[in-house]
Length: 384
Image 1 (cartoon, helix red, strand yellow):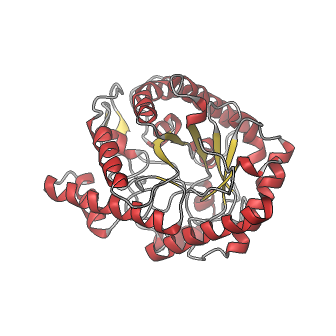
Image 2 (cartoon, one colour):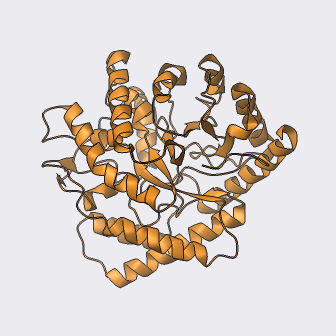
């Protein structure tokens, strides 16, 4: 995994805006409708090429395919694993449920996400088909090799077993422990394939913070921390054959604009996150609820052998952060861990984590990424 040796490197968290034509096709597939496979492949190719080109134009150093071929950051596993069918019901976020007028406003403005009613586990979960992943990796490599510019490095996303287990309700396994561990065993196939392709594996684990105010809302903190430890242990086992320095772990509190006043503090979970086999942690530090939590990296000293990818761009607002604001945020994190070479500049979360429900206009996304790059240049001049 690349360090910021001569300059502060820029990256993001995975999902980027999808073209409307692709959104329409993915929603049709989700509804069980048939689509023209040739048209789907052409639309995915266009969308992936566009995502790669725009990242390079904006100055992103460590990029990916924008997750264009997949309907969402975790529900896509239904097409690659056995055991999932029907629809489940997620518990609401505690902050959304707690304020009736906000809930009404939220529901008025929010479009239905594929994460709202994902399938349930009704049978044995096993990884069955790697062909879709292999095709995505091959298509991405072909597109990147055709570009006049190249990324410094590529990362590739896959979900945490905990977010699959919490998001896709368990109607089959006798316990959450068995369910999480079984999903981790299945995801091992995907984790290893990504690493074998030569890419940095990013494990998306919003469950490691967000489920405190969803699945574990109103329950003792200790119960949530036990779930966190269970999931991290499962991740460590599933990545045993992947070099630790090739893994980055993304943790967040849910990618939506809301009060977030029930979010678990970073300082409560950080010592647990340090137990993960990950060479880098991707942390939200731009949004108004968590912008102060760089201080937690002082209270719980950040391991000297890890990188921190600091979220310095908010993915839920159409404000374009000023490059000076971005630089300030980078500098605070660098000071907190005591080494700017171990800091990369990123985003709090993805921009379209479930197809078509991104809250930031596409043109604004690219402006935000340009500002990310400009802010990283300012921070480089001041820090390195």
